[in-house]
Image (cartoon, rainbow, N blue to C red; front, side, top):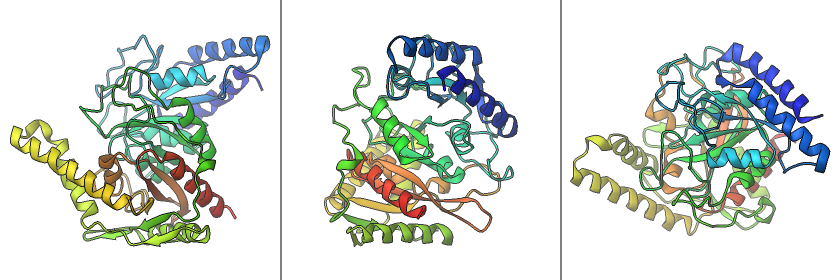
Length: 396
């Protein structure tokens, strides 16, 4: 199949899915087909240009792509960036073809809500809403979203796909719109959504690493998942805390994932930190309202955040991996998203840890139930290796 044939087929699929779900905010079919034609010419002369040669991909609207509108939070499509975000440029250099920009959030934003691929009455979650739907339906083989407190992981969990937030400082944010940086928002990360762990790992290898523009990105090598041994690692499980408990099907999925790791020689330990969720929510809510804080209150918020990260590192010295629900429940009937929907994803955003939403089961309504794997900072490869094992066990 040529790049042009692949792009044409995926565009047709994506237009059909968009008509049913409102998942796409911008199509630029002529641009995508022109890019595919260039790749076909290059292939005829010298072979594939990179590991993603001819692969159609989609990208969340908040990530700049030259030639496409990028509204950001404004909803105004008149802005057309004249340069790619670093991650978009790297995808293209690897041979991918960006075929569309996906819609964010929904009912509160211009353009209307994105509907769920299993049940239109259900919520998709946000903010990488359209991206999760496009990947879940197969209309997009691979997508990029961004995640500040769970904006990749929440929609991935509710739609039944894999969604990965890398270690903070692993992937450049250059070209994310609205603009963010390590000092202005140390939580936000760009990461991939896909239907297989191998695809996540391939995409992460393409987009990771310093671009000498984003000062928050460190030159830490990304190790391959195959180098991560699971035998002998220590992991903990957390499915409830005072005031929060996972839906029974989700809690059961977490326990089954724990059994898989134990069968592979990992050791289960108790999670030692009380108020893990409550403190994460408290700090995050103060951060969300930082414009209203006094100087002293802002300083206290940052101090509490630092203390939270320090407490986590003390625990992580003894525990390699934490397994939790990704969300408290499967996709609810459509309603505004609340802070409680993110309660399980907030901690990894505050600690900068790599965190991956893994579909593991379905509930009685056929809606996906998701398990979250949280690793130590810079151990993205261990999280991916664990996801490989859990996903493999789910299919056998």
